[in-house]
Length: 438
Ligand code: GLU
Image 1 (cartoon, helix red, strand yellow):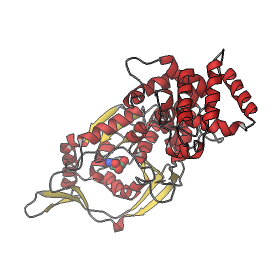
Image 2 (cartoon, rainbow, N blue to C red):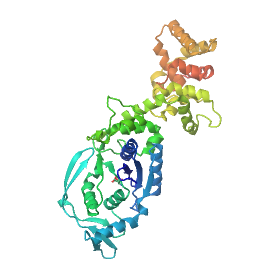
Image 3 (cartoon, protein in one colour):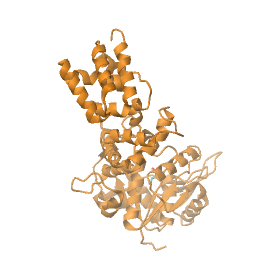
Image 4 (cartoon, rainbow, N blue to C red):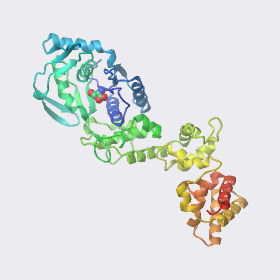
């Protein structure tokens, strides 16, 4: 393998789920590799046997696959302990490390820090100078035989021929310690690129409350992977010209690591919703409908085995433009799939708070008599009725909407009536016409 071909790695510790920050680090590594025709290596840093869990490994791999960050090679640090020991012994033999014995425990191998000025030319932040005289001697192999993060990381990055280390800036303070170890082992120091911090909308580091949820949670909430990736991309990079929605292949073409922002990024769920809406709008309706079948069936709104495909696609089309999460559809459109509905109490209190028997009965009769049942004819009949009653359209539109859909917002009322069908529309109107003291 040629040493100068780009090789980057994403190195998650499987002690938790893959979060937004990890997703962004993975993205920038993957993007860099793909933009340079290099290799993207996945390294599972599972040296901590107590805290590392297989379920987290599985979840991280699943999330990366869902985001479509394909990797070229994968390694597990837990399978490489002899490699780390061998390198630590090299340092022992050259007198750069020593053994420390602890009563009742095994022997630890410690690197004796040789203070020097370390300068790192960070691809994003520029030159960073570190004074290593404040760094204490570094444990390489702990007394239980496991390597420390800083040591295993350097050994692997060197032996795996990693050319560029792209990671979160919470690792900046580790960088000088790692450079010392590279130098001690006569390894070539890779390039470093530290990605800026991600903050929540209320300031401060991203927290669970402000969006540091697992990538798999965004998947469950109904975000499209393409939209999430596009959003993660904008967190620290911009294609320029105020362009925000950008296809991944175009991003691969335009991406330059040196253009990544130095300043911290803000994770804003509202912006993510906007982005997801941009993608949902452009999804082929049939594909989106297909994606919804499972959720709708789970909620008992359709029968997975036999449902009307064309009807579902028509309803999806009604909502597609304003959908910001796939999963919202089931809540917004449930009334189209139910025989009977129970209006939302607040909507009922607002719009079905007076006796509308007369108006509802009349409208239901008009619907019944329609020769042609299409959107324009339904609207015409409605407009004629309110004119005859001498009332403003909106005084009837809102109550009819709540009676038919149970909600105050939704697609155009006449489209709603059309897709509900004459029978269901009449039935729902008459049900309210009969209610006492509404
Ligand atoms: N396992 C480390 C982490 O998850 C990797 C840091 C690095 O990329 O060097 O933070």
